[in-house]
Length: 546
Image 1 (cartoon, rainbow, N blue to C red):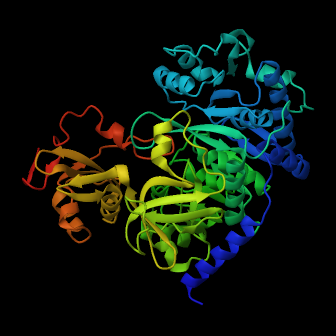
Image 2: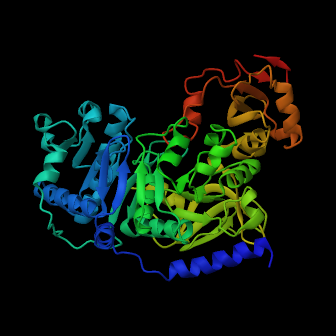
Image 3: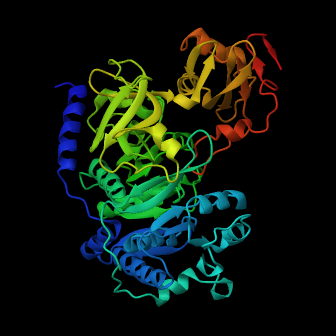
């Protein structure tokens, strides 16, 4: 059997086994059962904060907090905005709300008072739980929901003199808490705001079943040999990745090691010091440490990689002896595709894998008809525990759903064996003279030039062709535009791209790109308030710097 066939066969087996496995009814039930099984074993360590929780203490403290929140008026269905950094209070609060049947509304800690005001009002939050560091941001909201009284703003880390204290609620709660109403898998657990590519953030309505499925599927694929126990979490908990990674760690009976925030310079030290078996590995971190004997000191078994170059995929596996696998998902649907461990040479292709458990996939044209194999279209997803919809967004729901199918807005193609390849985002397309150009495709071609570390491609308004392609380049450390001039970049592009896709404008980034806390490049911020995107860039057509 070929390596390709082994990957497909393994995926079919793993899908069947995963879909036949029962998952807990709710988040609260899951945490309770894990506490019974693992007791005083360490479930998580916030190593920069000096905080630790065992499986038992996680369960008991969540119960105490839940009982106190009920006394304050939180009920099943109550929306609670939570603005906390990567501290133990975040998962404790989430679990406590899940026990009650209340709804967590995570709030980005980088938000301004105006942005916080939008999320709190749009989500109809009746309570806010906020770290003392961000309490003034909440208090400075230009518009506060009528239901959000001062007594409903609970502060962590400030003491009793600054209003209701999160610590006091935990201390005074009842460890034998029983929820006033039954909580089931189809109840709402998170109102997870996601910006997408345009417009104001939209709240994705996600159930207990959504989180149980994504966590247990992740555990099934990443730790099925029992080797993955120590997990590194570095992204902010108000994003979905740390939440499912935390639950995955619990499903594996392991220990999560949580960083306050990402640090590329300390990343290898974390991997070594905490004997990390699994993490999401950012591609730029691969360059932080040169090949050498230090590679053998790491305990990595499996890493998740997203959008890596082929040579980098091979390098991480060869250097650290790990399984490195791609996947595709989004907040709305959880996991949609997974690259199986036995994928063989396909793991080095730019594919994000085969259909994940509990997911049906099809690729459609603009009319909703499935396209033939290897043709490009929009990925549609159906299956168990997708988002209910976007909160109070009837127009977005009408646009995004076709019956039971969710339209991802992402362009894909699928080969004859069922492997999926992401081409780009419909709304991240550049329309040049009647031709559609996927920014993702151009960026991938640019990154293939060894001297380029990262690239971001954006449209530039053009009176003749409607839009032209502009590429922002971040070169490898120590290199400048003199070492990698535009002529060299363009000559490289000519070997990779059709001529109409080659960037007209080339610009170089000094330092780093503006990024989200999860290290995605913020293209909007990159071009915000720039009156003329042509200035400061090399113009291929006119062969000059503007």
